[in-house]
Length: 317
Image (cartoon, rainbow, N blue to C red; front, side, top):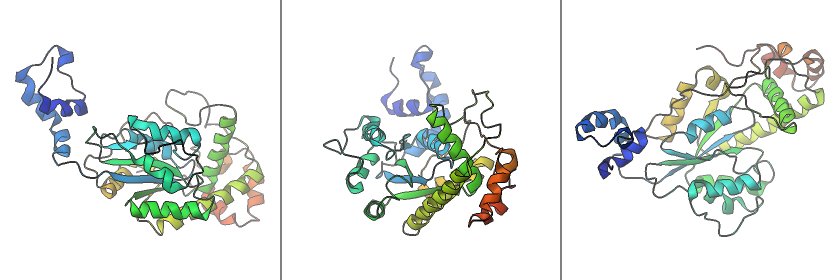
């Protein structure tokens, strides 16, 4: 059983299969066309050049959730892995979507960025409705290591007209607590994201974060936030914030949609991710917060304590 060729692509997008339901019925054509009209209208124009974009962020800022939204969008080809995290991730991104890599030989992760980056922006030539291609770039991956890599990244983004989405998390205290929790779970080979199928107490009980870790983490995030500031001072970017994503994500996604000039809307939909560490006060999140707080108040991080320790991160609409 085979529907008319002109409608094949729209059936793929709408996930419809008249054949699977018992055969092609010509009388149902008008009904089915109405159902999928909203998809057809997005693909009426000839395919333009694919728009490259990068999600620039730091760890524990909501990037995994946002990446999953991009990856599921019909018009986006988005790598789920952090392409510059390690050698294996880089090679995996190069091989995504079954496109022969632009790299003729296996590159080292430490090769010049101008040699590495082009392969991350390939898209299958037969998927003509894919108008945007991108990947997630953590600031600690090459950007903070040396001036040459930083300059190469800026040059590539300018030369290739790459659009930049800067995802930021403003609360440094909960971000550091989350990073420490992630490190503990990684070392124990446990999942670092909680899903709706997980009924455990993870993320609901207090944890103790060493004072020296909080010192290091706050300094580390300051360094990486400066990298985002430096890049976005030279490259046009849209800035989006974790607190808005976890409070009311759709306006944020609409903002990204308008910035990328992508035809189909970006929808939050249902999510399997669970928000953890939701208590309003750091006293309710860290069992040793009083000790850590006293220490940090005698450092240049004191203002962060006063601003964020009792400030709920995800508000109400």
